[in-house]
Image (cartoon, rainbow, N blue to C red; front, side, top):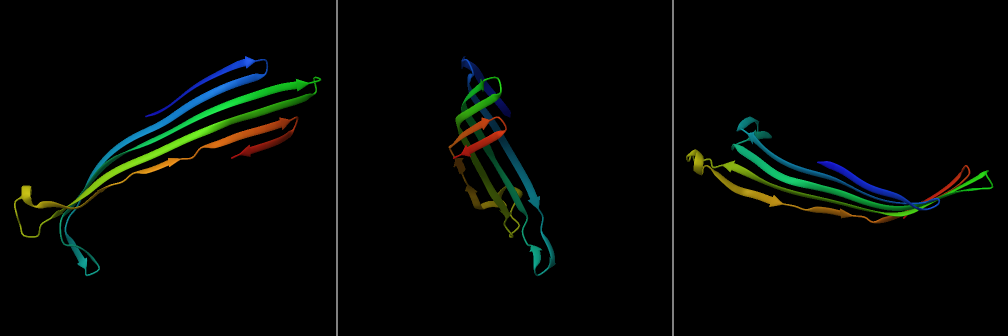
Length: 143
């Protein structure tokens, strides 16, 4: 699911304020099966394996800017922008590997959970932006 909302208003002559919020949300599930095989000593799988997992991703970004535009003496254009950006990303996977016991037990009891895990990776980088344009000359700064 992806979405974006913004609000922009001219609060004074030439001064525009804008706030913008965007998001990207994902959920997933998977399951795969690897049967036994034996091609040679270096390429073999001696047990049936089932892999399954699920997880989610959340990405959001909030931007706030102020933009001032002015024309001087009907021949010079000045445009000044300042703002901040707050992005945030988070991914949370979970998985497990089910391995068949080699002793031939029934299907219901053949599988154990020898390896499983969860993880979380988060990113939160705040930055400031600014820019100045005078006629054809441009200066941009991002921190």
